[in-house]
Length: 236
Image 1: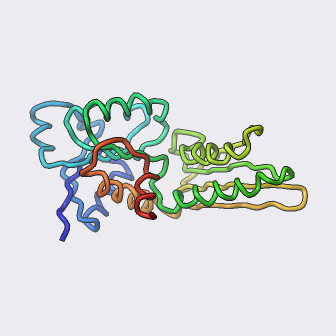
Image 2: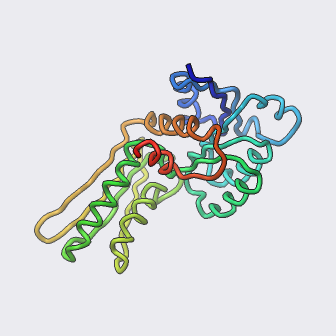
């Protein structure tokens, strides 16, 4: 039987609670959590509280990620970041990871399905780009509480498809309304027909499953990795 991995949660909203609920199924134990009412800091008391923690899991706000990385790295712990919208700090985060020799996995979306969807969309764009009568575009929808728009997932899709259409300004449309769990579509439209590839998230459970998979993968590693690196190792 594999050894139990102890983790701490950064953020205790819907995703944090879901991860806590599902953790035991993966032989993972949530030791504690930190949020706006219980701030993470590098102090003797907190060092004692997290002594047995291997990995922190961050589902907070984009504005909090850089500070969280600095604190977690100073505490000498590994980190999984599921928060989106902070990637303009990517180089700074990598420097912290390298300087303090921790392990970190980040992703715009930890859903296994969406990460396979990336591969399908990339290949489809490669095929359609050979025919100039097809115009590509991306649509995405999320619940009204999601702050970043376009989503981090949509931006990854745009980057994947744009490389096959370097001369085009690829349109991305975003909707924030109601309680939509998440929808992303990659579309290729022509005068004669239209092709639509779509991923619909039915719940947040897929994100939690991916985050817990990342925890098991990174807990004894050093260095900075995208979630796609985790999946590439599993697939290969």
